[in-house]
Length: 494
View 1: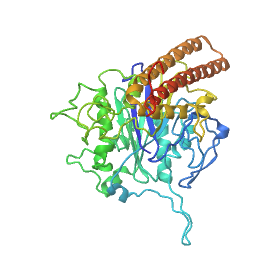
View 2: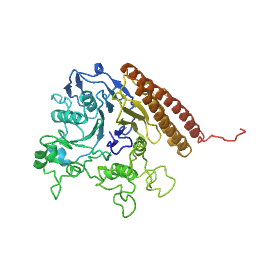
View 3: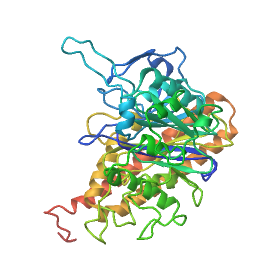
View 4: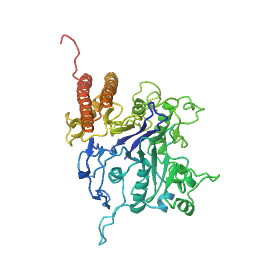
C-alpha cells in the first residue's frame, strides 16, 4: 500500500508527547473502506491464518485489548493498520518501502505458492495484512514491539518490504524489513521528527550498537554476515548507509517518493536549508534528503495534519494552483492523495494518568478535504459513527461522508475550499475543547469505572459534534457543486 509516515519525538512536539502518524492509501483503482474499533481479547485469534499468504502462526492465550483501524469489508484479511493496546503501546503498520535487486536476490521475499501441477501449497510470509494483529496485543513497550516483530520476521519471513513504527510514552522505534527475513531498527531521537514516503529511509546505522548494547539500534543477529557476504555496503569510508545498501534510487522515486519528503521537511524547516531555486540544498529529486531533522519550532498535531494533507500548496507543483507553469502542476504524487483511506495520529501525552493520556486522532478519506478528530484510546468501544462503516456508500458513517465531501469539494475546489478550511478549523478547535473539558473532569475522578464512563462519554460527544459538522459541510459543498451544473441559474428572482 502507498502511504506516508511522520514520527515526532517527545522533545520535538509542542507538549512533550510522542506522536506517530501515517496515511494509509488504497491501491490504485479502488477504495478500501475503513472503520475505527476496539478489539477485545476474546476476539483475537489463538491460531492466526493470513488470508493473502496462508501462513499460520500460533498466538498466546493472553492478548491485550487494542484499538484498530481495520478493513470494513471482509475479503482480504483484517489489515488492522494502527492502534494502541492496554499497556499504552502504539503501533502503525505499514509504510510500504522499496529495495533493490541485490538485496532481494540475497534474501528473496517469501511469496505464497498455490497448489498446482501436483505440488503442494507453500505458505508465504507475513505482510501488512497481518503485522498489527500479530504484534500489538502482546507487547509492553516500543522496544519489545521491535523485538517481537523481528523474531517473527526471522522465523516466517515477509512477502513485501515494509516500515513499521512502535511507540510508548518515552520512545519511538522505526523498523524496516530487509529482504525476506532480515530487518533493521532505530530509536527515533527525542528532539527530531522523521519523514517516510514509500522508500527505505534510514540513512545511518550503528551496526556495533545493534549487535551489542542495542541502546539506539537493533537488527537481525546475522546482519553483519549478511552485508559482508552479499557485498551490500556501498560506502567508500566504511560508514554504512542503509539507504544505499538496502534501498532504491529509481527514477520513479523522484516522482512518487522523494518529493513528499522534500515538502514535509521544507515546511517544518523552512530556514534550515535552501529548498528552492538553482542553489537549493535539497530538491524534490534529492536522494539524500535527511531521514530525520530537528524542527525549527515545536510540532503540533495541526502541523502533522497539514503535512500529511499536502498537495504541494505554495509550490509550482500544486495541482490546484491557478498560477505558474501548467506543466509543473501535479508533476509529483501528492501526500494527501485522493485514495487515502485514513490518517491515524497517536499522541501519548506526558504527566497524565495512564488511562487517559493517549489520544488517537482519526481522519478518513483524502486529507486535503477531511478533518482530524481526537478520541481517548483507553476505551471499550468506539462511537458507531466511526465503527459502522459499510460496503455500501451512505451518509450514516464518517468514512463515506468524508469520501463524498472530498469528491464534491475537489470538483468545485475554488468555491468549496473556503468551506473546507472552516470545517477543518471548527472540528479541530471543538475537538481540542472537548478533550480539555473531559481532561478536567477526569482529573477530579479517581474511580476506574467512572473514569472509563467519562472517556466513553467524551468520545461520543466528539462523534456527535463531528456528525453535525460533517453534515453541514456536506450541504455546503453540495450546493457549490450544484451551482456548476450546466443548467444552473442564479438569478435571485427566478
